[in-house]
Image 1 (spheres, rainbow, N blue to C red):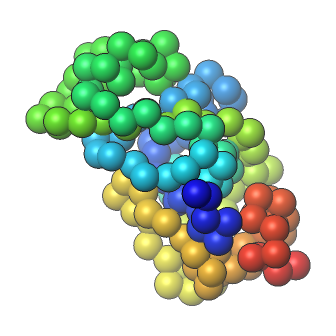
Image 2 (cartoon, one colour; image 1 turned 90 degrees about the vertical axis):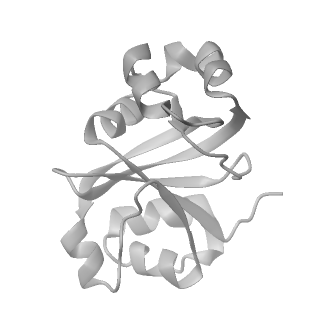
Length: 159
């Protein structure tokens, strides 16, 4: 069941954020099980050196299986080489492939400084969920971000 009051904040390297937003990478892989239902909004946080929210996407599907199976199914959609994938998945017993759709790049990224100026903000190592006040805080940092969140989350994020 989709929780309309929840969005995923996903940390990715800048090269992957760019690839997701330009459509050349449609599957993001993670070393653990991701329990996010289809339709979950995803805020993309590009890590250093960018350190900013750069866009939005929506989860179309999550496939959790062995790392080998996830690679077999999604390799051409991950935007990485098998060598990179194998190094990332080293020691993992399961993997999740998050199929992303409906991407939207912010015209102006929302910097870590702006996010922290609006309140306490800590980018996650991998991902975390944002609800209620956290979402309103992020939306307050920029009109483009707020408008995009309102479109994705409806009444949860006030105008």
